[in-house]
Length: 372
Image 1 (cartoon, one colour):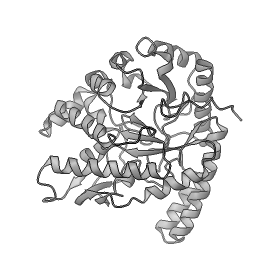
Image 2: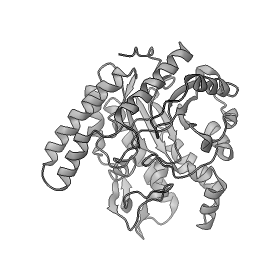
Image 3: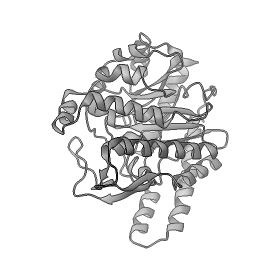
């Protein structure tokens, strides 16, 4: 067993060796979900299999040397739609076509707003409770999509909201309520995943927004406001990080572009405790935008190790890149992780489970060498 890195004060930072949260679904779980769809097993039988596979996953994470553990998003089809559809007034549905990634299209799924958005209960509270119950001495980390994902990805039925401000207020309140509910069940490490920032990272993305009649600069400020207001009432001992990604579906991506155009907002205008940032290839640009980090209590988790492919990155190259990042952010404010999860959707990326765990152990080993 790889020796875990000594646990840091959770309210201060993510762990030096951390991870984004999703893992490849084991074959047994995939088959069970298919059997449930065809009616060959009951919902209760599927839940039992999910519980068993998540329990195995938690132990594997701990064996690999991670201090934080997730449920791998094993109960979800999508990293975002499943959670968002748990709010009042939001539902999951089948669309006309899927999302276009680089050379591949996703399943034709989406979410739509059919009534006022709210939180009266959320089925994923139970998901966290189970994770917490089996985490043992590890920290149970829960991942949820950003409120921006509903703003940018949902279809809205006419007549529900008179204006955007009404929608915004309801959405923020729903997030504040679900975050408090998770906290009440023991959550102290929450990660907010947000791919909407990718639209602002390239000229192509900005032009697409303009073609829809939207103002990219105003949307940047709205996106920051949605994050900040959603977490504004969080308890002081709840660590909240945000993961920014350019898409991750079957080892492909949705967009490219460095952080420069929105760096002042991301690194100087968000009230999160840490940022998980994609930095595994040239699509993410240089570290220079990190110069806008203006808080000694903001931690930057460098996603230098790709989750898209199985080949391991050269250790000395990774260490050199971490050293390069210290030109802009002190070493004690930096951490290391894969650039994204291994399965943002149930299909998963194009690598084996063993390669996945080799990647995780690689993160832990490099972090031990750099920070211990």
